[in-house]
Structures are given as structure tokens and as C-alpha cells.
Amino acid sequence: CRPMRQLKKLISRVAPSPSSVMIAGESGTGKEVVARAIHKLSDRHAKPFIAINCAAIPEQLLESELFGYVKGAFTGASANGKTGLIQAANSGTLFLDEIGDMPLTLQAKLLRAIESREIQPVGASHPVQVDIRIISATNQNLEQYIAEGKFREDLYYRLNVIPLRLPPLRERQDDIELLIHYFLHLHTGRLNLVYPGVAQDVIDFLKRYRWPGNIRELSNLMEYLVNVVPSGEIIDMSLLPPNLLSSGEAASQATSSASASATLTQEENVTALEEMERQMIRDALSRYSNKKQAADELGIGIATLYRKIKKYSLAAGQN
Image (cartoon, rainbow, N blue to C red; front, side, top):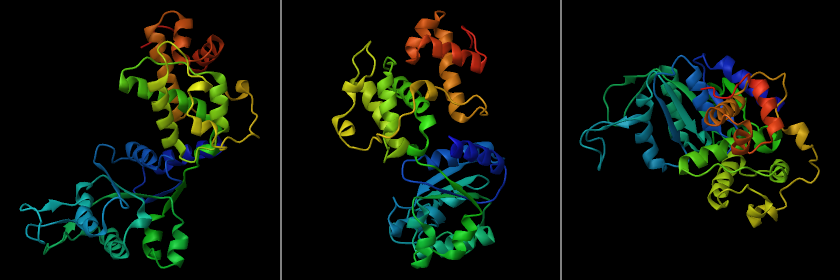
């Protein structure tokens, strides 16, 4: 998936910078995952990563959540006051999700904080200096919001220094099979269930599906499937939810063969997804000296397993 390869390279390049990043993408595409990856790769990785969803907190509470307040600042305030999330993120990264839903009054206050590198908690007589990197995210058209007077243009340019676009899952067909196995491993491990295999026709169908809910929808589907698949059996088409099969979201024109899409192209650099796959294969090989057993646990054919062992320079029994 060329857009994702370009995005991953760009993330690696911009992570060490202190400049603000704005991630645009549909709901469920993994914007917070990208924000955390940027933080992890930055010089601030050992400092706090604080995330807040601007759409999830009522407007009257958002200011005190972001900027904090001092004792007696307002009726009902905590007797000890409260440190705001901006101050809590000092020396680290503040992730502002759904930034387009921030009220205009708070947009002005956030802009001042960015420009002055200090905040004024509610009721405080003195400002507090802060050093933060801001990563914001939106699934809205903020340029349209600016034209409609819903978003400050000056704040937009302050936040959108490094723009990143996260492609929807329907544009990432090459990643879907790997994500299927990743989420199956994740949910079976979390729920202490046996890892099931998955039939190739299921993988082919899910590659054609349009994924309106993106990665979040795929993760939820894999969690559902590990709960309903009978022990010792593989996930086949009969286990897919009826609404998924009848939704009409599967694009019939997608006809890429399983052999062409079973692995990512060899010339790619090792991506985060490939590293997940490498780890899953390495774990299976450490548990089973018999490669057929390892392949069965991974839900892939023995030939595919040998191909991936060669690709990742792995050997049975590796730790």
C-alpha cells in the first residue's frame, strides 16, 4: 500500500521534530495510534503522552480539563484545585482528538498558550510555563469550518505545521490480511482463547469489503469471531455476521488473487505491520518445533510459513 509506506516514512522523519502535527482521517482509521507512534519515536518518548477527545467532554468542562483550576476557582471546584491536561503533558506530547469540535472561545485560549508557551489555570493569578508538542486529529474538513467561522484560521496554521493524512482501510488492501491475523492474536491472547485459523475465502471477502468503520470495525469483527468460532475449527464464511454478508459493502470488482496478496512486496522496508507479523511467527516457532503445527496456529499454509521464515530470517525455536 503505497500511501501507507509514504506515511510511515514521513512519520519517522517528522517524529524527532518539536513541530505541531495534524492528522486527518476518517473515524476509526487509527489516528491516536499514529500519534502515539510519533511520540514514541520522538525525543519526548520518556515523558507523558496525554490524550483528550475534544468532542467527548461538555464545553463547560473542557476549559477546566485542559487548563486546570485553582482552589475556589468556581462553585463545585475541588478543594485542592486540579492540574490541567496541558500542564500534565509538560515536556511531553498533548494529543487533541476531534480538534474541530473545540469551542471558539477555547480555540483562542489554546492559541495563546501555543504562542506564549504558558497557560493560565482557571482562577489563577499567575501563568504557568509549559513545554509541549501538540498533535491534533480531525475527521472534519477544517478549511470548510474556517470558511463557516467555526474554526480559527490562525490556530489552524499553528496546528497544521506538519499535515498527515491517514488513508481509510479500503485503500489499504495489502494490509488487511496482516491486520486480520494481528487482531486475532490480540483478542485471543487478551481473552485467553485458542488462536483459530481463518479460511482464505474469508480473507478474500474481507479484502473486498469497504470497511466504513475502518480499523476499529475490523478489530471489533475479529473479537466477535474469536468468541463464536468453535474450538479447534477455523473461521469460515458461515461465521461472518449476516449484516456484514448482506451489507453490499463488498466491492465485487476487487479480484486480486490470494497468491498475489498473501504477502507484502519484498522491496518494502520493514513496516510496523511487518514487525507485528514477524513477532507472531517468531512466537509460534518458539512454541512448536514442528513447522506444520506453527503454520496451523498462525492460520497460514506451510509454504507461506516457509516463505515468511525466509523473508524475516527466522528459524524454529527462536526466542
